[in-house]
Length: 99
Image (tube, rainbow, N blue to C red; front, side, top):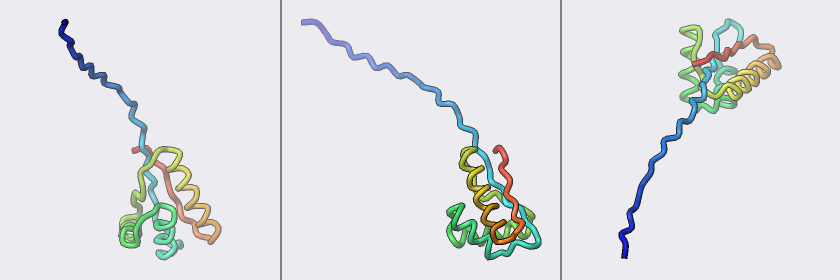
């Protein structure tokens, strides 16, 4: 009887990196802190503690990264936030920036 030889072949597959995009929320003097917290919870799925911390960072420093997503998701969340703001007559601005 002959000997059987097992051969293990490891193939490395390179998966292209999908670029990530940051949603950056900017401070303004009109949008209320309560509205910002609500948007962070409802659209960006932050906990109440995270939302309050981010809101304070936006208020104190002028802006904050509120999420990192694929381009399509970042653009959608940014648009949703600004549409909700306009519906309530707030000038909230979210920018989408490549990470």
